[in-house]
Image 1 (cartoon, rainbow, N blue to C red):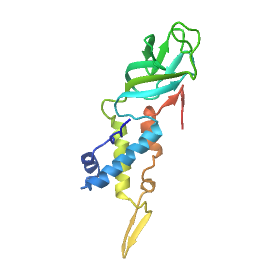
Image 2 (cartoon, rainbow, N blue to C red; image 1 turned 45 degrees about the vertical axis):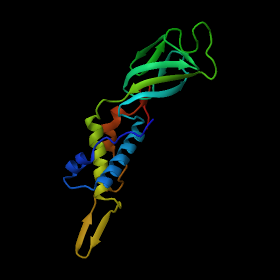
Image 3 (cartoon, rainbow, N blue to C red; image 1 turned 120 degrees about the vertical axis):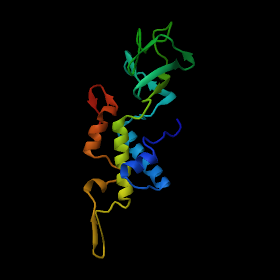
Image 4 (tube, rainbow, N blue to C red; image 1 turned 60 degrees about the vertical axis):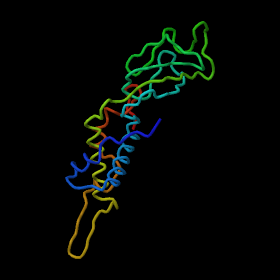
Length: 190
């Protein structure tokens, strides 16, 4: 998969910070913030067309596609055999008779891998994701050295604790992003 674009633009970052921003610094801060968000959510979030996922058959009833939301599935195959007897239900592929059998057989071939080509992600970046990206990038630009306090002669500037870990998500950020985080069953991964 090609590199994914950041969740916000340099112009949006300049508007959010209400300051002129060096384009190279803005691009780096936005790319870093987007990477932090993707790592925490375990989701690409951006629309990806014809992504290929190789899934191991564990539960014979369904295969869960790793990226959400699933827009469409264009191909499902095992080894070189294309399967057409599946149904997409949300982010799950269901198959009559389960995933442990191939048409005309009673078992699934080793190693039990299914290759799925599908399109996933949001058409536009959700507002909450963009807001967190801009917040992280703003913090990085405001305090790139991650200083707690800076003093020059009689001038002193103290940074808020939230800007010290530029590039790390706060509890408030995690709350905003929690709906985009990949889950297993009904339990969220931390």
